[in-house]
Each structure stands twice: as C-alpha cells, then as structure tokens.
Image 1 (cartoon, rainbow, N blue to C red):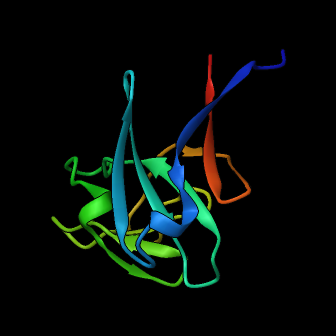
Image 2 (image 1 turned 60 degrees about the horizontal axis):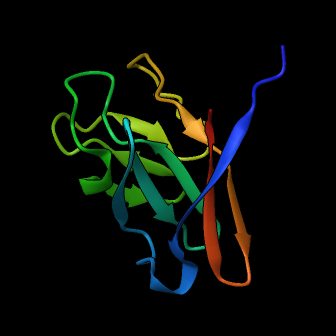
Length: 107
C-alpha cells in the first residue's frame, strides 16, 4: 500500500547552520534537521531510541550524529544506530527548491 506524504516548508537552506542540528516541530513530529558539510539537508526523529536524548543537540561528524546523553552514533541519512548499539530512528525525505527546504511527512 502506497503511503501519502505531505510536503511541509521548514525554512530556508541558507539559514540552516552547517553541521549543527536544528529542532523543528510540526504537529506531533519533532524533527532534527541537519545541513551536512556537503550541503545536503537531512531530517530524522529528534529523540535517541536509547534514553530519548535530543539529537539536534548532538555532535555531528560526517553523516552521523552522536547522542548528547550516551554518545550513541546514529546515521543522519537513514536513522540506523551504529554497532555495538542497536536501534533506529525514523528518517524523513527532504526536498530543496530555490533555497526553500521541505520535509515530506506521512499524512
């Protein structure tokens, strides 16, 4: 079954800090938005699956964020927790058009 997505404007790409997280709340979703050194913008759920650390406050290295509570390493690209820890956070597609950043969320 195909899932319907809604496109939500979250701001200007040029306003996002590079290699730092930004918390964005849209309805019941709390997202961590990251602009990587490559210029790509990514979105994942803002809570670590371990103890709920705020991932937007974590340290970014390449395509990973380290949870500020217990240093779990989580992929900003697909939300997968890296070994030896285990888990996953949802990741969300991003579209950028004319400096405007949109996140695609389930309806």
